[in-house]
Amino acid sequence: MSVTVRVPAKVNVQLAVGAARPDGYHDLANVFLAVGLYDEVTVTPSPDGLRVTCAGPDAGEVPLDRTNLAARAALILGGRYGRDADVHIHIAKDIPVAGGMAGGSADGAGALLACDALWGTGASRTELLDICAELGSDVPFSLVGGAALGTGRGERLTELEVGGTFHWVFAMAGRGLSTPAVFREFDRLGEGREIPGPVASRELIGALAKGDPHALAATVSNDLQPAALSLFPELAETLAAGRAAGAPAALVSGSGPTTAFLAPDAEAAEGIAAALRASGTCRTVRTAAGPVPGATVV
Image (cartoon, rainbow, N blue to C red; front, side, top):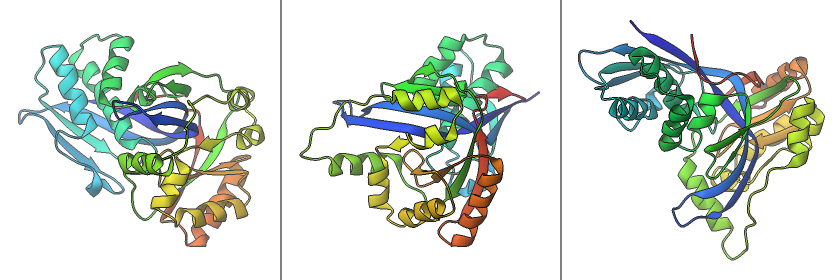
């Protein structure tokens, strides 16, 4: 018997970042939107104990030891319910690796839901979200999907209403960016000035509720973008190419280096994608729409 869970990528339509806290994290106002790029996580009982395998684009960049969030999810859930985590976790990867789209977090949420179903633990949604928060700041949203405001370090979620479908183009860069390194650069760039507490944009939340891509384009923001551009200056060329192709909004997704372009509709998204492919400023280009559901047993 095996259980497979499909889990989506995310784009941050707003990422407001506060100053570093004493614990090293930052308070966030993080508006997530789940989009239709997916990893599939399959969990099967294993006589050889816990092991992780991965296939798909950039699979060689994915850790296959117990630092992988999918492995950690199995170990934590097993520990809570007195189960040995004797499972083979296979990740069929389609979300960019180290791309700022929560691919590792998606795998953690997917493995957690798959192990819960395989073992029949009967864990409540609240308990699963608690484990997700223990795994990482973005993992709870990977479980929930749709659209949500994340506060604290991003793990405390308030689901948001979305009045339509938003079409996106994602340009993948030639190398990854470390999320901790981007936050360190954010701190360095902010030295000597007061950083305000993060606040969610009412206008942005209203644009999501209306399903209005032009209103959303006018309100998207990412406080980590200057840090990502400082560490990876070539991303500015990709952002400029997408804007020149007609994208009403262009931003770095999360900590990067994937860049995200909001399109007015599906046809415009294909045109922007073609222009980005021809620009020579990125490695690969994908289109996706959102919101979509979070981690789901298939």
